[in-house]
Image 1: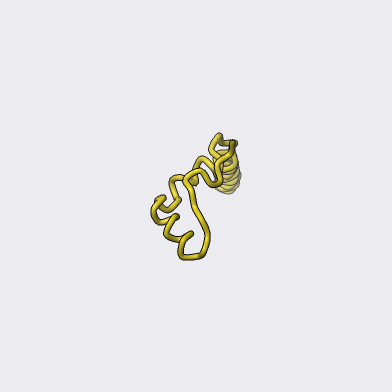
Image 2 (image 1 turned 45 degrees about the horizontal axis):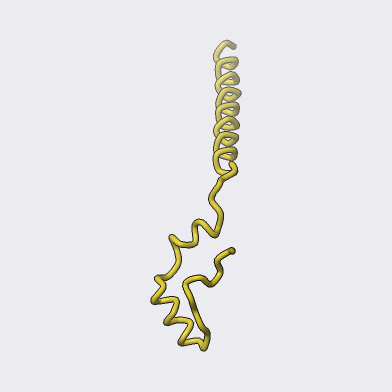
Amino acid sequence: MWLDIVIVALFIFAGYAFLKLIGFQTSRLSRRSKRTAENMYDQYADSPRQQRRYAQEHGGTWSEHDGERR
């Protein structure tokens, strides 16, 4: 009898711990950030030389100030 109560209590505790862990992960992954796509783009952009070459190959023009907000 007491073993059944302990097992049920363990299942309840495991469920509670799982839900707390999921809630923590959700709040951590969905929190607000000051980083925007514009701020992060420099980390992933091609070098200015590669961008210029790509623009020339495709009939366009390129300058370092394209896309900047003024």
